[in-house]
Image 1 (cartoon, rainbow, N blue to C red):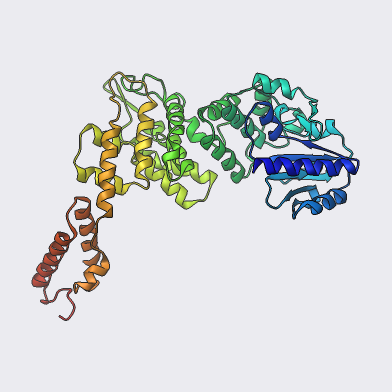
Image 2: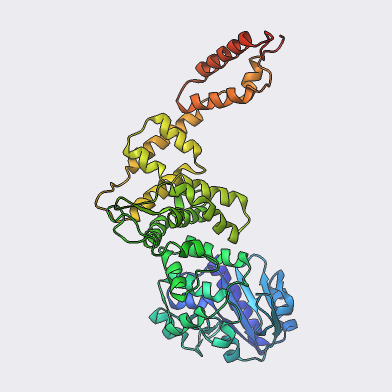
Length: 462
């Protein structure tokens, strides 16, 4: 697929050249090429020809898709290539849509590159010759691993760039330049749409090996307060040094988040899993107390649910995602406790039954354990938990008593019907065979029928 994208890019460039224009690779594609990394998408910028001419060229090659025709942005069906005309942008307000945008094929490479966010994204490469155009020292910054803004005036027009800087720092392991940190610290993020913030957060949590860099960078910029206040509140919250000699809850949370990054591929929802790692100890900010010389956070896993819910709700209205995250956060202590106590199969089955994602729950507990430095806390017995998870899955695959089975046996829907099904599920988790469960339910129904005031039970035909 990558070869096809390169081939079609070169074909576009040759046709543009024939019309007197020049086609450049731009943005992340050039950046990643220079750092010897793969890039799945290609961005092309075409200079020196009119939009109508470019459209004619694209129509000769394939099915043209106008992503933003008035802005001179196109793609070709079947290819991961975006083709754009150089354009001028003028901020009209605080929102990301508040820009006056106009296409200008004659703007030149200097002005075109100046509208980019960071120097590492401002480098252009002529497609036909391979010649590099670097007006702002982006090649040097790529080599040195520095994220530096191109233009202070235009950079500040889009506050999302604060989050992008932090995200790049985490993704590439780079450092944000001091002058860029200082500029970002003065920018107001309150006008950002939550979808844009959530998009950057998703990348920061699901791509880097060390997502903590994203949050540490925002903290250095003083930019946690508006979108991530619950996370900021963890800084300075003490923990019992016997179990958490790594430091405060902020430090622990960052360590857990990094540990979770190595396990997120096991979760049904990697983003939700990483959010759970991020919010799992939010309750410690409000329930941590010193008692008899000890630091305790009793019940923090449930106390923090309201704060975690507010955090997620600020970013998205996805109900399923919120439920998934809160479920994992609420039960994150259980795997370690049951493994330590070598609890019964029925107990571990009940735990997995409560979980929205049993595999992710084990991984979250392991990440929580890895995210602490302790002289007294034992490592979680992951082997024990995985053996028990296999047993749980085997139990869940066995035949079980359903509502249809009860009706077939002659029971009519009644106030007791739901109780019977809940009772059947408890016995299922305990490993009781279906036939035995059915006999016990029928015995209960018979007893109810016998003891009913009017002498009637719930059996059909009575």
